[in-house]
Length: 225
Length: 224
Length: 47
View 1 (cartoon, each protein chain N blue to C red):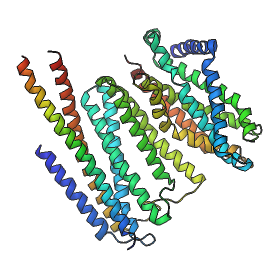
View 2: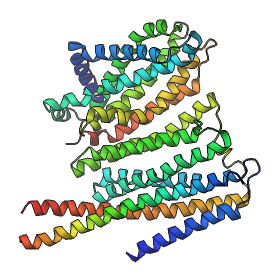
View 3: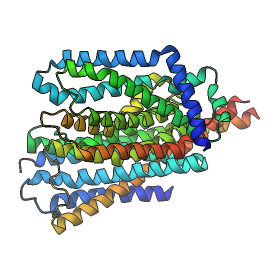
């Protein structure tokens, strides 16, 4: 319990610190100006969301192999938290795009792929609501989760190739193409902060799922009497 | 090889079941036809735009049709619990999937080939010059749709709201196939046709990846 | 500094999403904990 409170405090502190760094420590970008500072939040969220989906994938694989419920708890936690971070990516992307390009959505390769990623994991969660029996739900969603995750590189690859056919404005400019060292440091610090926040949310969601499973089990016991 | 012979036997069963009634093929053909016509009502393309949008719309129609056509794939095994008998009859559960996805690919291909002349007429796009490449793309795309669709059909058959669930699971998963197939097809049917070998290779990779995944995890999809 | 508003909006909305997400988890956790206590109490009684 105390560890979770420490994790929560750490997450909040790091997030605030990274925001401060993004505004005051990172230099202003030459071509885009102030609006570029969204980059630290937007891309860091994307990385953390992706790690969360990877955790879901690990949970899925381990569940299919070991059939231990706790891996399913990891799966659903990773998926939901990943979805939260991905939602933030999809919201901050257009907020960036609008002042720069005058339009909200540019079918930028990365943002479009992120949207498909978002849809995939929404489907994962929807599938879970449509299977009642817990073991069956865990197995079916784990299998779909595995298919979804291996699809992700294919989605990103296909859409990137597609965009080379019809070039469109790129939301973040050439990402990683010659980042100033201070910017790089601020970014990696932001990414770290987002990952800690992600870890905290996964831990909380996992604990909820564990408790819910216990409650369901007890409810069945009570009914049996 | 046991896998091969099992698959052939099961494939025969799938084909014979379909050709007895031909309901799957006829409904799929009509569906694609209806969708293509509706598309042209919705966007009323001029001759030039047709070349740009037509192939993409064709692939969209194929995707929608497939997500309907794949519904009965595992559902029909539930009515008399034939799935258990199937699993007992074969040594490798993968042969069940291989048979079904081969049958599905064949059904899709037959549907597409039947649709091609109509598509060419409605959208004013000559298809004969690049027919062989077009068939290659249709084959690789349809294979991808079938592999993913057969796997997901096994999943959705065990859930509620399966009719809505299968498209919901399948369509996001198949975005790579849609994007690449449509782009390659547009290039092929352009006034100055180009064969996008990168795209074709990508489709082959997609098919291989999901075939492998199905091979690795198929047996769990069929668990009781 | 005209785009600073957008940057602020992005950060605030982003934090808002995370905070809302955490709130839903916390609320559900409180509900389940109450449910769990209720169930645990009803068991020894039945025995």
